[in-house]
Image (cartoon, rainbow, N blue to C red; front, side, top):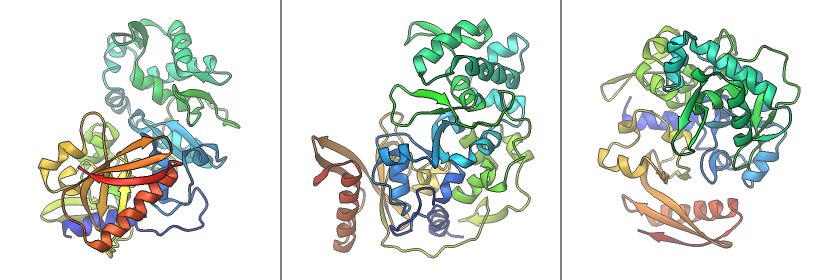
Length: 372
């Protein structure tokens, strides 16, 4: 498989090549993996780019068919509401070693106190259950939680100048406690998930006890394959050994320009080379850990994936050909564009259409496109 064919596979698997249509709001395959809602447009714009007619972020947020929760990498993701109980199971760590890697440093005081990391997450979730009985702002949840947790669960935060629970365990334990995020709130508001099944708070004992369509390793290979175990481990913040232990038996090995990788699902490399999308900075297409495959020119990586202030990306055909940033003034929206290659007149017309769609999604009018 050539590099361009691997990217075409991802575009097809993620449905980035779908035309707009009258689809239900949940009609996007990437709901199985969770749609990260980071940034001004986040998940709602990711759906628009996959042919789902979401007018704006607010429409997605009030839909009764979806829910927002902190899950993989402690980031907020949208899921189909009906899938939430299984999502808890699917995104739970496989072992204490896996949990220790996922909580990024919070395991050290727990280990020093002789507390297994999975048990620690269960304790945080249990106390969150007691704290959040009505909708509550994150800061207040943290304050109340700090009063209930023992020292191994707490750390002093220099930026806050206060002692509170570790951030990653706090976030991923929320779903273990049966809590979801209220969309559109900043700071975040947590509340109990309606009709949540009765269960003991904490991670699930067997993350594999869910439909295959929701299992994270399978979904990485399905949407971001061909990929290696190291790619999946980096994405999930899990040990490579744990990923290899749970590697799907039906994964198909593929060579991409001489590099080994695996994928799942039907291989479709047919592609519209005139496709043009303005991807959000945290769109799933940009989340693969093999950045040299996504953008072959390594000198462009810092521009596309900076440590802070990540821009959007311009997808043309199978290639990322530049970055974009928004500039808003009242109801006027300007697209600031940095192109790495010239566009044909036809492609430029498509870019104009996408820019107008993005402006409308933000409830604004396109004032213009400025190349920088």
